[in-house]
Length: 107
Image 1 (spheres, rainbow, N blue to C red):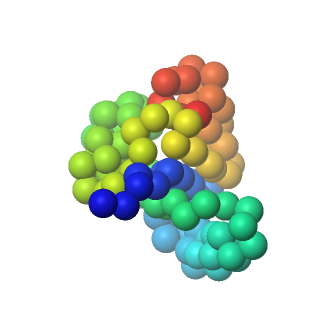
Image 2: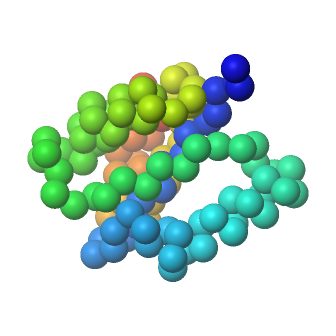
């Protein structure tokens, strides 16, 4: 069995959806280039749609719905050191929420 991979969860800016990082941000090319250069280890990149939240709280939606789903369906590490969250605009604020408030969610 392969070793568990780290997981990265980038979020788009407001008004964009889960494919924005791929189409406008060229995330696939950036990640591939960083891996090829030895600056990033292979990782699972998860890009959830940030609108229409079931729980009403974005951080709760990520920690209670998205993370468990991804951990069940993909071989990713479950240690906070194996998780990263990135965002722009309002999702940059959410990244700060994970960094300072939900410190057990991401490393």
